[in-house]
Structure formats: C-alpha cells, structure tokens
Image 1 (cartoon, rainbow, N blue to C red):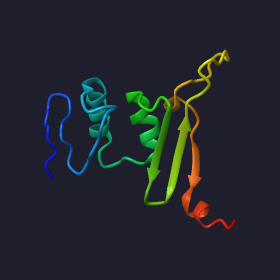
Image 2 (cartoon, helix red, strand yellow):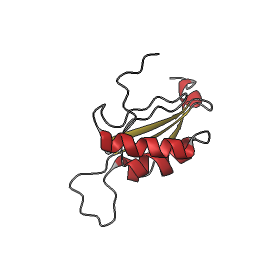
Image 3 (spheres, rainbow, N blue to C red):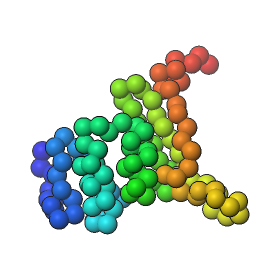
Image 4 (tube, rainbow, N blue to C red):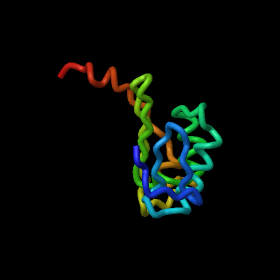
Length: 111
C-alpha cells in the first residue's frame, strides 16, 4: 500500500498500524499518538487505548469510540456540558466515563 505522504519526523510508520492524529497535517497530535502506539505496540486493548493512548494524546474531545472487534464490544464517551459549573466534572470525552456496549447482544434484540 502506498501510504504517502511519508514523514518520519512526526508520522513514523509502525508495522501493521494505520493511525491518524486529529488531521493529516497535525504534527503535534501525530507525534504523541505515534509515541503511545509504539510504547504499547503488541499489547493494545480497549482499556489501554482509553487510559494510556487517547487520554495521553488528549484526542476525542467531543466523541470517542473504541472498538473491540474480537469481543464485539464498543466503548463510547461523549463530551460533557460546555457550560457546566460542576467542579471537577471533565468536559472532554476522552476524560469522561465510557459506556460499554455489547454489540452482539444489541444486534440480537427483538423489537
């Protein structure tokens, strides 16, 4: 696959990994994302993604979804109220509670 443009200074290639930090021309996020992916390479699971990758990169401020295709589970978080006055309440989705959805069970529900 031709993955050009190739920029090893802020978007290093990682074997068998395709990643995109915010936007293609966003070296700040891509550098941190690459560092986290390399650190956890071979041991990336949903919990690691939520706690150690996206939270560190601080990406997913409005919406974040982490897909576990092995177990057919989706973890979702959404942004908190922008005008909240509750102290300590995280606003960004990556810092908030995630909801775990069992997609197998959801797609087998009868209506």
